[in-house]
Image (cartoon, rainbow, N blue to C red; front, side, top):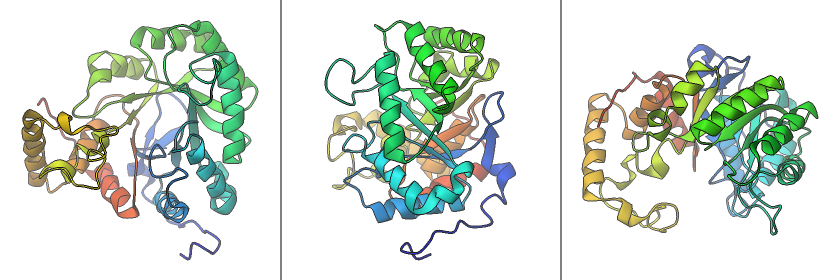
Length: 326
């Protein structure tokens, strides 16, 4: 379609719904197995027309869950501003089909009330997020990280109140330790605002939620689980199998460091890549299918810098489950 024209979503976007969606814990929500994350590629320094093209492609293929946070960008807040422009330009007629999440917990503005888990910060941050996104409410609001200093009751009561005020429909936690998750689950259930989902880093190289018992707890207590960084920021693709490309994240030494690509890791990646080839899959496709095969996993959050990249990652929905103990 012409991006300058009025966006009309593909009428076939839900034709494969049985394969595309998983139930989120014990809730009424179905989430796409592949969800679109706005952590990278949707900020103020990125092309808005490219963002439009990617989100159009995602929605046209049944990906209706867009995941954001207050400080996604860069600069902070700009990914939400992009979402606001997308709502205004393209998605307002489809708002009720979208499941939009945002988070608060990491640094967002100066001073003692600009991060962590206080009632003041969470409330102010969500109010700002709604303005940036041109929304009256979000479908899902997360505590982005565990705050060891603020009483859990304060954080959780603020979140419960946010739902009861109509600013969010559901609540989630990201990167909370197991014991705090258990406390939160009980606290929120007692206040009739059950926890919908937990977001954690789970991939072939980082299995912490599985090893720590978080995945089992979520599965046993009707809480969904969504994996962020499922491709380990590109390590679990063919990107680094033959060196470090000059335009890669690792070359920029920002989130990925060249020292992390050890000979042992490279050997493991090449072995997995060989296995993927035998399955007629890419390494990324196989890595995503491994996550989706784990008990209790609802969805994987993928980023995308192009529609071609997103299309390749979506193939994992139809891939055979992959089991690996490597």
